[in-house]
Image (cartoon, rainbow, N blue to C red; front, side, top):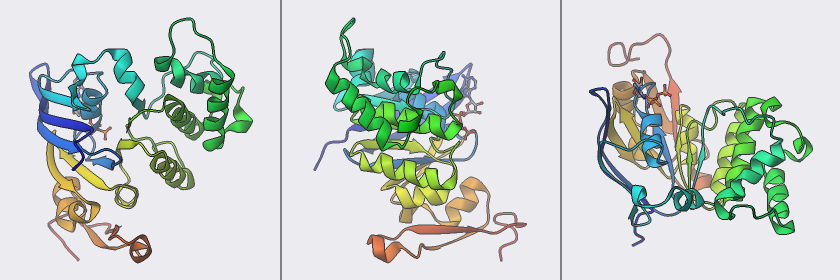
Length: 270
Ligand SMILES: Nc1ncnc2c1ncn2[C@@H]1O[C@H](COP(=O)(O)OP(=O)(O)OP(=O)(O)O)[C@@H](O)[C@H]1O
């Protein structure tokens, strides 16, 4: 059996005496596409920040490819882990091309210049996300969705083993939400992404993790995790879960959620 690529053991994190994450344990195998779910404020971004080395947890360990991430140098980790966040800081008038080329930085030594092969990799990644006609446009002037796609292109160039995405689809229309997720799946890297769209997560992910008030309360396949009980207890909504019509074609049970409006979960079921 493959050893996990990422392993989180007994992870807890507090800020000014308030516990945000409580004793979290899970492992992700190479090649898996894992969705992180939870209501607003559940701790998704806080957990992801501990995984991409922005925050050091108070307790517990994050092991990447057998090594504690805090024992790796920042450069070593950046070569292997790419991050796409929901809010994009200003890129100070860098062009789309420049931002995508930043994906090469962890792989280059200081002062080394961009080779023809590097340029080819950058152009190819930009083409893959459908942004070739925006090549020289300033990154800051791109639409929210174009920015997200540009950041995926930067990750493609970075060629990581693990891609961490914090609500990557928040600015995208439905077509690009699906496209971006299918693109991420096609990259052949291990992915951990947080989602608010539970139907999208259920259809795209091999496995799901569910956080509630900083605790991991469910994990497993979408079929195991997306249940009417979980939706009621964790998200406080009344919903019906049925197999997606494409399940047979996809050779797996893809749960599809139908939400009921005007009902309080657990109180007034239809
Ligand atoms: N640096 C911080 N200082 C104080 N509180 C924090 C800090 N970071 C996170 N929190 C709190 O931790 C909780 C979890 O926040 P987090 O952003 O991780 O949740 P989330 O699941 O990503 O939420 P959302 O879906 O709304 O983006 C929130 O109550 C938040 O206010």
